[in-house]
Image (cartoon, rainbow, N blue to C red; front, side):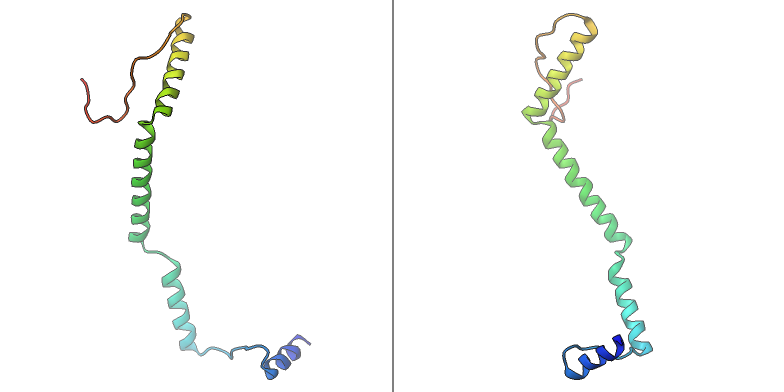
Length: 103
């Protein structure tokens, strides 16, 4: 029933149903689809390296923002107060990934 309906639609020009593929057409179609479906190892590594670089830059920018440093200050003060049982007012300065390193 379905086959006769499709044949009717095909004869009326309402739908285009291609004929069977030759073995060469099947081979060509499979080669192209595999080649484009699977990225090469080099492409995967380049994408991974780019992602890591972008993440590293974003992290270094975030670590130097005032909001992150105030968050660390608050947590550091809370931890010092918890450990010592005393009261800590503030922390003078916190720097992450600054250009000069002190020893």
